[in-house]
Length: 237
Image (cartoon, rainbow, N blue to C red):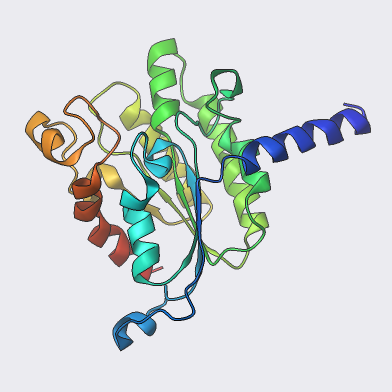
């Protein structure tokens, strides 16, 4: 690609992604909190959360999410880069679901203390519908991992898997995500095993998901249920 064309493409990607920052919460200098909160490792830090509709929160406000509530509890600077329908490996710009994460990460903020990636649900859905295997997903996930490590060498980086969605290619996608992240020493919260989110049960979904037929998006009560699990995980990084 000619230098001008490459620069033009990078500029378009930058403008497209920057427009997709969903919410930016800044640190409150007058924040009042008990000493155990003020002394915690999360307190006052910068959190960048990156991913798909697990991050954007689908049709509900970002303020209902576990990650926003966590940031508010610990007076964190919080920057949300969720994009409904986004994939790790597959470009969905034509569908208004954005460039693939292995490219999109490049225009995330330069500084972060914590970087959380929630991803894989839409990649698994695509592989299920197209019948393709996991090889392409694996290779692009490696690109994303290497890029994030290079961009944020001093940050605490982790991934969060999708829930244990009872559909083909979700177990395969999760296995690849766990394997690849382990090869880069990136911690992963395995939400298929440790979340307490029983996505396979319709009665559970009717209480904790945005609709009974939804297998991805928690409602406010669901986020409250999941929050302590992720709080404990992040405090241990």
